[in-house]
Amino acid sequence: MERVDPVAIAPVKNEGRAETIAFIVMVAALIAAPFFVYPLFLMKALCFALFACAFNLLIGYGGLLSFGHALYFGWASYLTAHSAKVWGFPPELAILTGVATAAVLGLAAGALAIRRQGIYFAMITLALAQMMFFFALQAKFTGGEDGIQGVPRGTLFGLIDLNNQTNMYIVTLVIFLAGFLLIYRVINSPFGEVLKAIRENEPRTISLGYKTDRYKLVAFVLSATLAGLAGGTKAIVLQIASLTDVDWPMSGEVVLMALVGGLGTVFGPVAGAFVIIAMQNYLAQVGQWVTVIQGLVFVACVLLFRRGIVGEIANLLKIKL
Amino acid sequence: MFEIFGVPSQALFGQLLLGLINGSFYALLSLGLAVIFGMLNIINFTHGAQYMMGAFVAFFLLQYAGLNYWVALIVAPVVVGATGVLIERLFLRWLYKLDHLYGLLLTFGIALVIEGLFRNQFGSSGLPYQMPDLLRGGQNLGFMFLPNYRAWVIVASLLVCLGTWFVIERTRLGAYLRAATENPTLVRAFGINVPLMITLTYGFGVALAAFAGVMAAPIYNVSPQMGSSLIIIVFAVVVIGGMGSIMGAIVTGFGLGVIEGLTKVFFPEASNTVIFVIMALVLLVRPAGLFGRGV
Image (cartoon, rainbow over all chains, first blue to last red; front, side, top):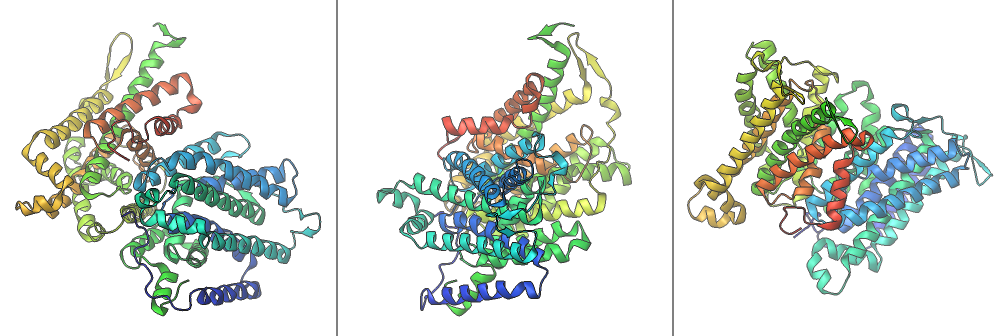
């Protein structure tokens, strides 16, 4: 019934092995990448990759389309930037402040949103995010249109100077991998199996005795928290938090990343985030056309390849990614 | 002049009037969304862009063809409705067998394309649209000044809303529509062309949005992003009202417009967010929405 994943991936052979190989390839590529690509671009892409993975946890495994994930990303970004710049928090505490903010917001928004399903769920999350956008617009500490600029990167644990680009890259990579592995662990845990059962058939899961609302809420909070981790890290990496991070196009962007990469695949959101961030980077000269192109990509993905990049590859090779 | 709760009556009634105006747009747009959702099971994210297109068609007609507001009020909904028919035939019809969420994603993408194209062409600043001569000026009602155009907007949208309600709930065509919403296969078996009805329903819902756009043009400027923030508020309105009932959409739309107007008088800081707060409260008390059937 309420199925998001359009295609159960056909016969799986060597379950788990393909994922391990893909993971090793990904880590190797990310370690080698800063020698070839501008590190700041990579760090930005990694933050968005984590953001997209967090979003994918909800839609890909819980079947819940949140259209308001900018709320957690953006507010975590604001609180991290504010606590680092104004309160003088070290980066680890600043990011933690952002993550905690996202978790609390996720708990509040999630408790409301899971009261409805499907399309209504999407509209509620979007509306709540828009409400918090207006708060961000009016609140004094967010700096309105200017945002919070010049956020200090500081020294991690009093040891690692993050103003050094290499250090910053390694820290970002570690944060991304930690988030990625946590999500991987969650979707392969008993909890994850129940989540998938809810996606496939919620009434049946209820009749099996699971309190599906609790599962959905926990998944929602977890997703919001990780989105917050991505947003907080982004504030430290790019040293800025702005209205763009909390506005609705950001919520749309993360949907697009997960969709392009492949909903319900482990690696899809990462690939999608890199594709979209690269596209924005190289298309920056054409300005407003970025929106049009993003819209076209949306349309093409929905109509022509709903499995996304990674989903298509997995389907071709008959493996699970 | 007198005061009510310490607020000058002029300000209070002025904001109430503005609230009713916004309410008419909420009602027209959420009505269109409800009609489309009923038939297609799709939430039309393009609705805001189509509202904006309505305003732009009116602007083009006046600017390049010298055709006035009254012509635009008929022509713009037809033109934009026709583009809607095209969108349904080209894109949406491939999605009916899939999860509803894909419809949302697809129409979101189309909205990005349309708004992006208009922004490239016309920039972000608004273009002014002349008010029709016939509706200039206003009436002094003693307790407040009532601009003619605003009175017209409220009356016209109320008529269109009630007309739509009448057609859907009280005519044979409406009966076919409601039947096809419940059970399309059975209605097809009776020899009624359901796919055609679906296409035309989408076109009609889009035309309603364009109609709202033309009416909005003289009040707000015509700008490419006029629809995108409005559509999110309309989503909240739809969540509050529930999409099961046509009359529910109309009542909720006008009601929330008025509440928003009153908030502007008594607690201006909250006027942007009041509808979202009401949505949260309704979800706590009545998760199915005020007029909703089921979840």
